[in-house]
Length: 306
View 1 (cartoon, rainbow, N blue to C red):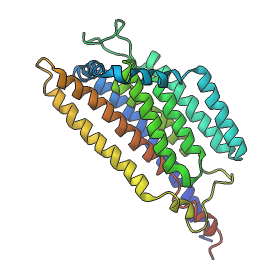
View 2 (cartoon, one colour):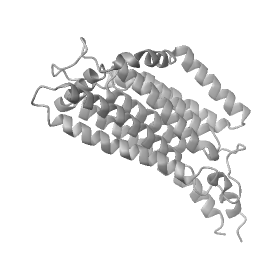
View 3 (tube, helix red, strand yellow):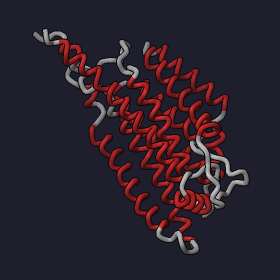
């Protein structure tokens, strides 16, 4: 009589964890906006990072503009079509539907937040003539949502490699917007959190509880074993190291706020934003992966328990 409970618990916990991660991501987005857009020290640090991004940019801005040109409305439509095709071919209709929700939700909410909800106080240090709010970055949100969709669609054994690939794609897109002075560091980090937040909502909605061919791992947990724990731990470690380095560099720049900044301070501000982007991408993608139900391999067996 008690045997079904472990299976139900295995399904319920990922949803609760998904909701918790979504709330944390959306709260983090608002925290980034408050800290770096709504306060004078935050705007100062971001303005320094924007100025610092010009140091040596001529060596990489050509490649950065190629990356940015890949994200457009036709590319967004193509991404939606690919998600639908992958879901249909793999008979994972629920995953495909939730992956679509994540992509469309992240992209649409990025524009709504940037243009109609969030604002940017004028402290007289902005580099834009109109002082418009640029948080979150639409290009980075699209790239990060594509990474999230990939993680949602693949089998459990491929989720960690997908997280590594997704983090790399997200960093490449976010860094390109920094190099070309399209966005400030907080803009791209907020976009990453927004996309992963929508992915976490998809998990909370039951994206990984479908009855498709990949909904269950092999009986002895081979599916989880195919994703080595060291690979996921390395992603966590890279993110944690990036966060620590970004915090140290950012605090050092803020101590120089009352004096004229030199080349090193500008470069340190730029490095702070770049490293923080790596940290946000790695930590958030790893956080999405660990939402997978620990008991999905055991659920079929639990129903047969005496």
